[in-house]
Length: 611
Image 1 (cartoon, rainbow, N blue to C red):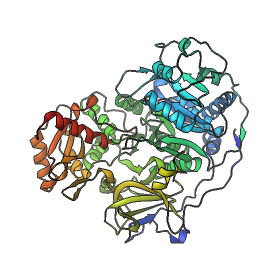
Image 2: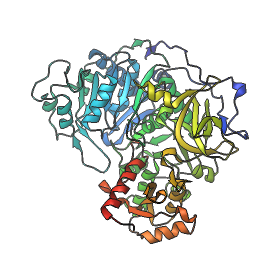
Image 3: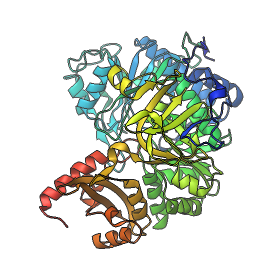
Image 4: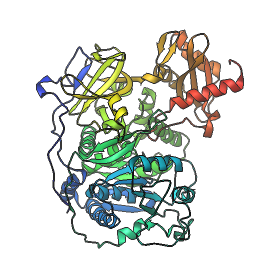
């Protein structure tokens, strides 16, 4: 068992409890605070794992369906300690940034706790990153260690070799031969000392190509099957995970999260879902993102539940098959993932049997329209589906619905604030002014869940993390929201995504919800494009349901029958005409509207006319 010395030091983030307004009470100001029970856990992620091992050691912790690997909590604890010793032999130490580009695998699951046990910092990258993005991350974080798979698997695409990417980072590595420890020198990434490769290519790429680098499996096997515990002074408020925000803007930021952030956020998420040691959670969202690693992995680990990875990258068929085989009780996804599940069932591509034990799950990334929620209840038995809201910088969940919330609250809001969390709605032009109930403004959150800072970027940190007169540090989210008298929060869009037509604010979500109600519309995103007369006008990108069709005029008439005339889209574009035929999304499934604006401008220039 891991032996770790724990500090109880924690920065002050709350005023006195008697100043807090509990989230279940009525309020006239758009400011609330979550409950103060259960108390915060002052522990590290791996320290808490040891407690779960003592209670549920023989229970299954991780199932990697595509690898046919199953790990109990005992297995996970021992394997992560073995790997930690192996990484330590390569120079990974406390504070080291370990940059990782992997899909959802057993190796990645083990790696999380191995890095934590060393007091090092895990930096997961989106495997879709280009070599220039990888080099930028390595250099910004001065990372010495890089772990990557031989091939990258992305949704709906064949495996892609990473040999060329590695050639760009470490030129001429092929044929050098193993040099003992995999030490590398790179002008492109001067801090880099080790490259560790997991060959997941099923023989398509020879191990000999990577002989200059270290092998993950060799490192693991070099340590005895009964390794000694590590005695490293890891503190609960140490940074353990740096997330490069995929964001809805073009420039990622390095959000620095602590053990307290991740451990407690996962615990409170699982509590609100009602997770127990008997639950089996199928988690297609990626481990490199907060959705997979906190809402999925941490929530399961803190409750002794089982997490299932159906595939390295999202595959809706494999996700549903894993639910059936593992008799899962929970299924995760962003709304577009759930739509993909339903499409497979609708067209008979997956047997409708085997979903009887499903009851709960998490939808995040955007709100779930009521029609979609009804289908998930009917077709997948997800009657207790919960909605989460947050941002990478807040670990990530700050608000969440309860399974027993009324369905209208679970479709029109993101629920109420989490324990030990505050939220307020402020005037977008004056952040010191808290708005009355029902008025739209910028959402800000506070509490234990706030990141420490953006790594190496004090200016950006200061822009969004601001201390008030009571000494409480707030994260200003950039999201437009409103709050009702019961503390439910409704996200009405990104402030930057507001369409300003002739001086009037138009909220894209209002139009999107109406269009999504049309039976022939499977996907939709609304943005503002430049207009000479009004400054901006409404444009909608629409994806029809499989086997159905809708014309541009039909879409406009549908909106015209339900909303005011100025909300009717002037321009309609088809998603199939975009690159790859899909909406541009972040790793968490959020639509990157700034890219749609550019696409809309390009399409209008090519057409040279108004349709």
